[in-house]
Image (cartoon, rainbow, N blue to C red; front, top):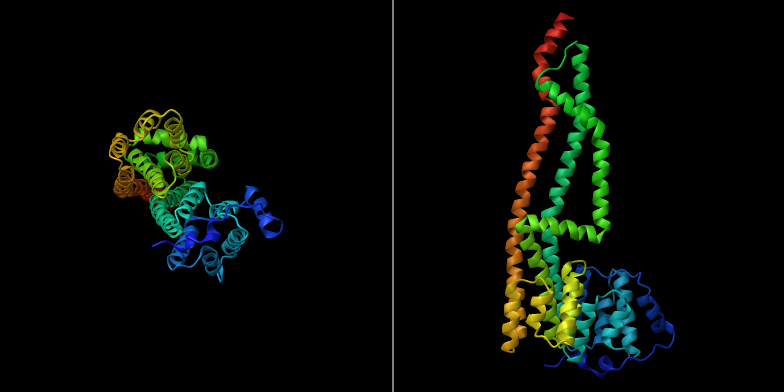
Amino acid sequence: MTSATAKPQDAKPAVPPKGGLAGKQITFGKAGKVKPFNKKELIGIFRGLSSMLRAQINTADALKYYGQGLPNKVIADTLARIRDDIAAGVNVHEAFRRTGRFSDMVVGLIQAGADAGQLHQAFASLATRFTKELHFNKAIRKATTMPAVVITILSGAFIVSQVKIVPQVEEMLKSVRQEPDGLTAISFAVAHTTQKIWPIVVGIAVGIIVTIWRSEKIRNMIMGLAMSKWRLLRLLVMSLRQMTFLSTIRLLHANGINLAKSIRISANSVKGTPFYYELREAADKYENSGVPLSTAFSKYTSVDTQVVHMLSIGEKSASLDSQLEMLTTMYEEDAENYMTTFTAAVNFAVLIIAVGLIAAVFIGTFFPIFLMGPKMMQGGMGG
């Protein structure tokens, strides 16, 4: 069944805007200061539009109906701009692009869906893709955020105990004229060192966090080092990255985008990683040098050998879409398994660190009191 998106108003050639709202949209899109919608917002938009297009509602009306009554005024205004552009004769994908709130991958798939008269399918595919991405993003945050919070709180508790509580214990000993010895002396020495260096250590830690957050180069360097030392992390990250760009290639190629362009657009989904430049080079070699796709991936990217092998089979048997779908499913399953193992490993490591910090707080704060209790009592009686 052909979707209502194939109606003439959706396929009109783009015409230059003539003032008014349509004319302002170009500035709006080119300003480069517009914040893209997050994945949760995109899922809602594309699911809603897809369901209405499947019900044979044309694109302009679908945008109108979905935008009406939305509590999020930014989304409602953006959809209204898109609808006005389409009514003015602008192609659907160009209308989405002008807003500046949709990635090249999204625009490319919308273009493929509109050209094939299957825009509803393109929107449904996008919703599915972002749903999977959101799932993995939540899993990563769950595996890393809580451990970071726990360690930070316990580290703060340790510093407070060394800076505020231990000095009070020392004063108690001095008041009864007792000198610390053995483990008590060591505990006080640790506290003295902590009191001197904790502002420096905290400042360095904050500086490192800010530097990592702001510098993509340093993030990649640290991630590369961590991946080289921890095999589980490397398997997880490589699975997530390969799943991401392979699913994007499949999505675009299956909806009519030529393979070289699909690869270039998919590179944007892993921007900030080594795969970004590798994929773009592979696309250029495949398109301009005439080398087979599997050879381009083998020579110019660091993908797994399994990817190269299955792409080669897909080229030889004219089943590239099927092989890409199989690879995407395989890496999704691998990523799920590695994520479960990674979460368990991180939780165990956090448990060990937490026990260590709690023990440090206890030993540094209460152990001296326990050890020096008898002497304090004797000193008090002697006084």
